[in-house]
Image 1: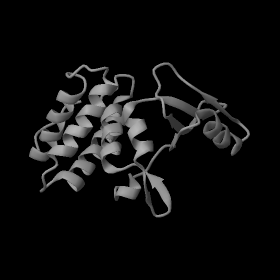
Image 2 (image 1 turned 180 degrees about the vertical axis):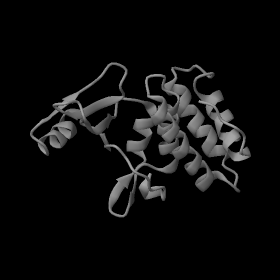
Image 3 (image 1 turned 180 degrees about the horizontal axis):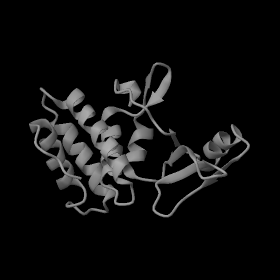
Length: 167
């Protein structure tokens, strides 16, 4: 998000990796008291301390269509690979609509998504990109349009209209 201009405090580091075990192992070697675990329903692994404090999320290539889009289309910004805005929107939408995600984190995801839509879609014709993201989020919702594409389109329209949003 910082590479796209939205700087805010974060609780951990997010790493997207093709080789999950290698990326998680590298992160785990940074601190002796860490372990790598995949939790039920997670789209990747978490690197945690012995007292379960989370240090990093390692989002793998097999976690979701949004993650694959982020990996396959990453651009270099300030010398690092960064997800394109459309991939980041798809990932934020997936996190926002995850019932397993704590409500407080979903509010942060919504704030990030509002920022991205305002920055990249306000004042222009983003129809093609909105539909491309709709296809990604529908695939992540296993083809259920109520969980995926329809909900994304409605949320996107509400953000642009400045309408109240509930999560």
